[in-house]
Length: 137
Image 1 (cartoon, helix red, strand yellow):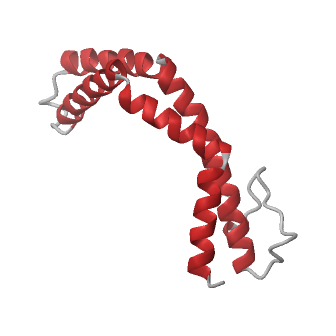
Image 2 (cartoon, helix red, strand yellow):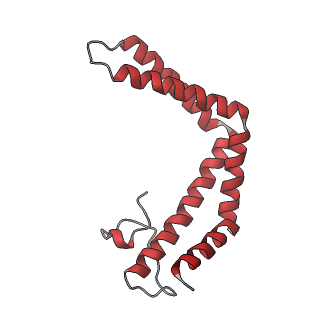
Image 3 (spheres, one colour):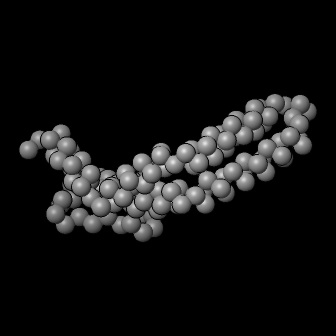
């Protein structure tokens, strides 16, 4: 089996994994949650207002407007993150990221000559060697 074919098989295995299934279901639930999508849209509009105001020189910035928009952005962010679907998605994405970091770590170890059947990815602290890293957390 060549590497590309093996990668496609790995992709199938990942898509069959319960973490991927949960992540995908949570992503779809987020996409279909109209209230959540509206909140995200509002948040992005306010964030653009903040960015526009911040792009001005200090003298041109309207501090009152900036403070007001920052408070509104924080309020909207809190509402987004408290949404049930977003909370589920965040947890599912964390689990999915851990899976992908472990998979990538195994691949990296194998590329460094480690035995694919026995190499172990350290999911703990940084060893200082990026070649064995499962990703920064």
